[in-house]
Image 1 (tube, one colour):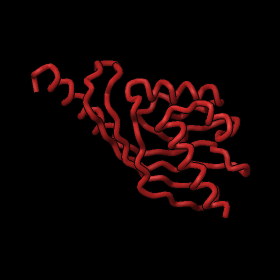
Image 2: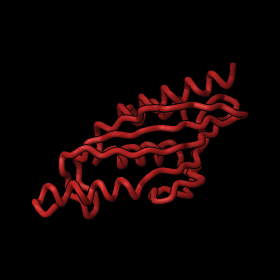
Image 3: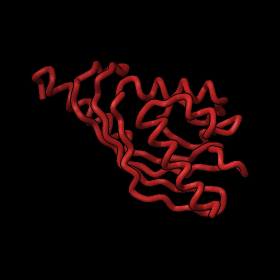
Image 4: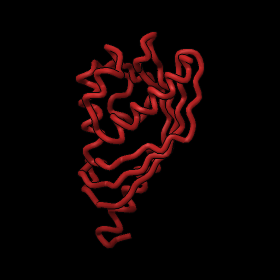
Length: 149
């Protein structure tokens, strides 16, 4: 039953927080600290965040892609962890360093292992994503927008 509860909790968390930007949901779903164990290319890689720091991360991450959506492909529970494979889609409507907003779609895939405490609160993650693919899409979108691609 705990494994099902973790999967349901994670799915709801992704929908409320990452898809819809509900920062208030962070308070109930996150442990006191959240560790980003492995997330290459993420500015928060290796950091331990409190809830306020996590909310800041979500807000900054969503700023350029406010309509982002995670399409969960699979949730696999084992012990105190849940592995989520996902497809991410968004529209690039906010500026990023080196990439002014283009209004064009961007997509990415990845897999994330989330940890939980005994109270079913998220404690951290280990993630792999296709950030190179996102960078390439942003370059192509920028070139298409400027008429050079």
